[in-house]
Structures are given as structure tokens and as C-alpha cells.
Length: 223
Ligand code: DX5
Ligand code: ZN
Image 1 (cartoon, rainbow, N blue to C red):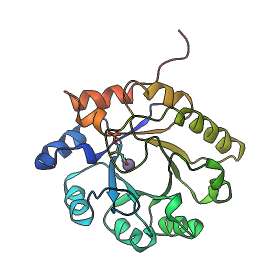
Image 2: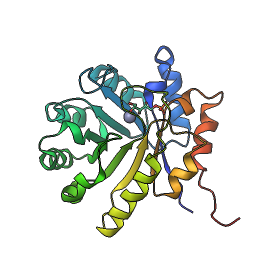
Image 3: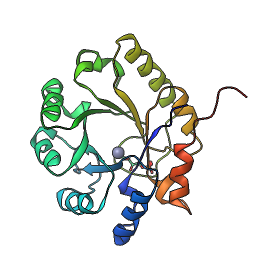
Image 4: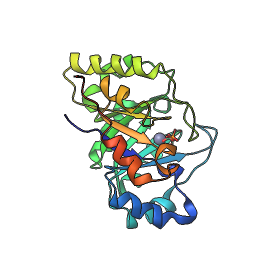
């Protein structure tokens, strides 16, 4: 039984104790650190950018999964690649020339990710599947941590999995927003590969154990 990849979201960390939280991540079973960039235009919130990326990269031993919730991401993808990103996600809704943007991310040596807002249909991806390494399905409206999971996401991921299989596409499916130990198994059962988790990790009494539980949340179908 393959285990999911786990990407704790830095947005929910305690920034006054960042080194402590990064050391926890380093020692944990996390596979990535999810890094949410918000510009106050694409989403109604501002988070963090390059100075924090630089600090995090120096202390974090896990690959960085960078989620750009920004308009015109083409202006910044070179800098995020240079800053140490492993995966760079741009939003489908923010890209006029998505094929070009994804190709550029790969040229920079990163894995190319596309994020879809809850209202964005998966069918818009069919003509760029060859350029995509990871599809990030938003299960909340992006902009804030700690929101409730949108249940329709389950059907959306199931449909996306079918689309990928039908097109013999090996892109991974990542889900972001309201992910917890309570819905992880369902998300994995419909085809999710990577779980992003903010509050369900950093808000837990024992974050290391919370990551361990997410990592081992795939339950056998056989009773
Ligand atoms: C929301 C961000 C998420 C957020 C998830 O816009 O993209 O990555 O940090 O936080 P939780 O898991 O608390 O919903
Ligand atoms: Zn995110």
C-alpha cells in the first residue's frame, strides 16, 4: 500500500518560533514543506515572499512546494526557482499562456504544478497535460488557512483521476485546504497523491504525530 506524500503548510507555523517549527518538519515524516505566496490581488490576503523563502531554505531540509497565489506569476517564477523551489504551482486562473508558463518552470529545473480554484473545471487542463507534473486541487477558496473543506472536492478529484488515467498522464494530484486526519483516507481513496495540511499539523498538540497519522491514513479496503 503506497503512502501519500505529506506537505505541511508553513502558513500555519508559528513565525516567532520558525526555527523550532522547521526543525520539527526536518525530523518528521513530511515529504515537502508547502510555501504559500499571496499577493493581496489574486487572493484577499498577503502572506510572505523572498526574504522568508531565503531563511526557510537555509534551515529546511525538505523540498519546497511553492504555491503562487499571485497574478502574473511569469514575473516571478525564475526568482522562485533560484530561491530553491522544487515544485512551483501557478494558478490556472492567473495564467494567460499556461503552456508557456509550465514549460518555463520545467526549463528552470523545477516540477511544474497547476492549481485550480474550487470553481475551475478540470477540463481546462486537457490540452496541457504533457506539461504538468502536479495538479493542485484547491479544496477551499485560496487566501486563508483554517477554512472548512469543500465536500465537492472529492468528486472533482475522482473525475480528475479518471481524466489522467484516460490520457495516460502520470501527473500527481495534490489537495490543499481543510485537509485533516478526518478526510485524508477519503481523499486518498479517490486518487490523491499529496496532502497539504496547515492547521491540522501546526495546530495539533503533537505536530510530528499529526504528520505521522496523515502519512499512515490510507486504510485497507479489505475489512
Ligand atoms: C490556502 C493555502 C493553504 C493553507 C492550508 O489558501 O493555499 O495551503 O495553508 O491551510 P489549512 O490546511 O489550515 O486549510
Ligand atoms: Zn497552498
